[in-house]
Structure formats: C-alpha cells, structure tokens
Amino acid sequence: MHLSGRAFRANAFFLGSALLLAGCAEHAPPPRPAETQPVRLPPHAGVYKIGNPYEIDNVWYYPHEQPDYDETGIASWYGPTFYGRYTADGELYDGNKLTAAHRTLPMPVNVRVTNLENGRSIVVRVNDRGPYSRGRIIDLSRRAAELLDMTRTGTARVRVTYIGRASLDGGNGPPPDETPPAIANALPAAPTAKVAASSLAPPPGAAAEAPVHMATMPAPPPQASQPMANPADQVTGKVTEVPVPARTHLYVQVGAFARIDNARRLLTHLGGDLHISILHRGGQTLYRVRTGPMDTVAEADAALARITGAGSGDAQIVVDQ
Image 1 (cartoon, helix red, strand yellow):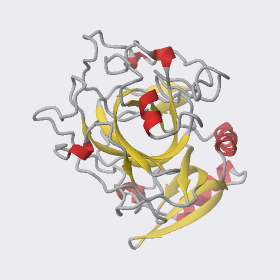
Image 2 (cartoon, one colour):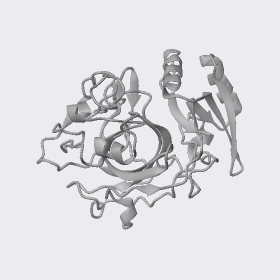
Image 3 (cartoon, helix red, strand yellow):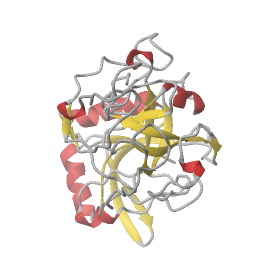
C-alpha cells in the first residue's frame, strides 16, 4: 500500500529505495495501528469507516469527517510491494486502480487531486491510511501517479479537495441515504475557480486559536459533498487540465492564528528560522507561523525535520506562491 516513509498507513514513497520503483519507498512501513487492521471481506469490497486515533513516530492522528477538506502539500505514490494486500477499509490494493491513502479522511471517499506543477487533475478513491512519511499529504496508486505525470519524479506539489463518499463496492456512486455530518470547524473550500495567486479564507475555527493547517492556494471549484451526480466528480480516469501558477514555493507551517500574540508565543517557543506571515482575506487576518519559501522538496523535508525535532508534531509542508 504505501512506500516512501508512508506518513500514514500504507504509503509509498518513491524516492528512497534506489530502485524499487521510480518513486517508491524511503523506509520500510511501520506496523499498522490497531484501528487499521484489515477487515476480511470479499476482494474489492470495503466498509465505510472513520477509524480511531492512532500514533506514528510520536505524532497522533485523528480521523474524522471532513466534508470541506481542501489542502496543499506534497504527494507521493506506492507500488508493487503492496499489491494484493488489504487496505485500511478492507479492500484489496491494486496499483492499476485510481486510489489513494490519507491520514485522517474517512474511507472510502472521493477526492480531487491537482498537480500544481502541470495542471493535471483527477479524481481518486481514498481507501487506505498513509502516507507514513511525515512530509507528505497523500499517497497515490501507481496509475493515479501516471495520470498526474509524477512517477518519474516520485513526488509532486498537489492540492487535495474532498468531493464526497464513494460506494462500498469500489464503484463511483455515493452510498444510499448516507450523508456525512458537517464539521463545525472544517477547512473551507477554495473560493475561486482557478489555481491562481490568492489564499484560502481563514477557517471558521481560527477565532478559537487552535493552530489551523490550511491550504494556501485556490483550487478547482469546490464540489458538493453529496450526492456525486456530476460525472466529473467520479473516479473515471479522466484528466482535467486546470490553470496553475507559473511558479510555487514550499513552506513548513506550524500553525495559524486569529490573534498575533498566540502566533508570537508559538514563535518564541520554537525559535529557529520561523517567522509570522500575515494573511488578509475576506475582512479577516490570519497570522501564520512558518518557514520558507523553499524551492525543493529536499529543502522542505530538512526544514520539517528541524521543526519537528524542536517539538512541533503539527508542522506540515504546504504549497504557496
């Protein structure tokens, strides 16, 4: 299921193992958390599940319903090593299918993944946990990576946007009479129809002062969570071309706050080369604690390692202009 350090169950991180795959494997995957043990069901069938909190490398992850999920980051992909094994929701992994692993989204759900380096965008089915490498946001199947044209590089800067629940039999339609409940402080979807230069509006929960990890670049138009009547929202393998910035940068973001004093406290606690970046949007101001810009994944990975080593398990790599 996953390679490359797999920041979540079953992930594949192309790049490590010299020649395991053009983009697969950095480290051997750690043992699966108890909540992710496969459910013994017929091949290609699964169960809808959210899952219990679990811990990997001293970081806790909390799966939950996220109908407004919309974030940027680095994608990886995983390959043959995991063919035929059970995914976290009880399906069998097949690298020829358009599937993916995510740390906290429910399963199975459909998401749109847009490669911010070339504008290629597809819909994939999240049916597994991962990636296990902390610096990655999603782990894609080999076929999904091929369609996004990222198998040779092993990673890509992407935007991941939630669409809705997928059917349990591996099909594309939503399960009947099941609508995921709205989450009060879920991340808002991008407000524009293009991948341009602006940032997402501050999330509704920012006023509560909990660190908010947010996507920072507009994505394709948000889709309704249910139902998935639009064929473009289903896993068909169709590649959509969308406008993307001519150039993007990588940042390691530790948190975002509505009050600058909270951002300053975090900055003082962690020190290093972090700084406060101010985002004004929709009449609101958000103070983001981050470091960057950086131009390469290697630089961002090194910065992430430094920051997590200083005591921030919440830090993550994001893509911005």
